[in-house]
Amino acid sequence: MIKIKALTQTFGKKTILDNVSLTVQRNEICALVGRNGAGKSTLINSLLGLLPFKKGTVEINGVNLKKKNSEDIAYLPEKFMLYPSLSGLENMTFFAMASSKSVDLDRVRHLLKAVSLWDERNLAAKNYSKGMLQRLGLAIALYQDCSILVLDEPTSGIDPMGRKEILQILEALQEKTILLSSHHLDEIKQLCTHVAYLEDGKIQKFTVDEFMEYQKLGDHAL
Image 1 (cartoon, rainbow, N blue to C red):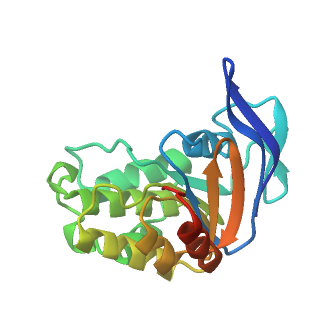
Image 2 (cartoon, rainbow, N blue to C red; image 1 turned 180 degrees about the horizontal axis):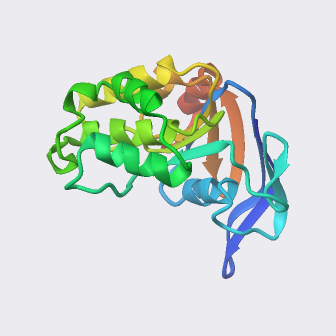
Image 3 (spheres, rainbow, N blue to C red; image 1 turned 135 degrees about the vertical axis):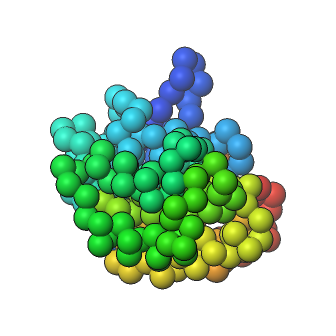
């Protein structure tokens, strides 16, 4: 579970997040939406422990990030670095080794199959399409088997077929709590249970149906 309480983030004299509180319950899939510059990345970096904050608290499965870093959260940024000359399997194995002393090859094989990359496992990553790279990144993020998954624009720049493949993978995940930023109402409707909408430094949480009605009432851009 993600629990953010009274979080405030400022840069200079500008307040980005103003006393923001948000709870994402276990097994929810919550979309984080808002205009560009609304503070989505700031919120994500705060709950990952990458951006210090003076006011408020962030808890990941009961762990207060001000006291201890959580090991139960995995993150896939919108832009991430892989080794282009290494194969998909080699990249997967390298990052698995970085997170643990030994590599569970059965788990590597299972995840590459789950993201439909097993047949292309020996192909150099530089020859992967954007959708294939995103699926490989997702497999790497899932290797640690954390209960919470944070995704920053997981379908950005991907063609419709690639988006469909990513959404199918996410839909198949069981017992994961997912927070993902997105600008696509169609994928939010298909995948998510809830929406957290950031605007003017404030946040409101809705069910997906409630948010669709809220969208109709005014200019609430993504």
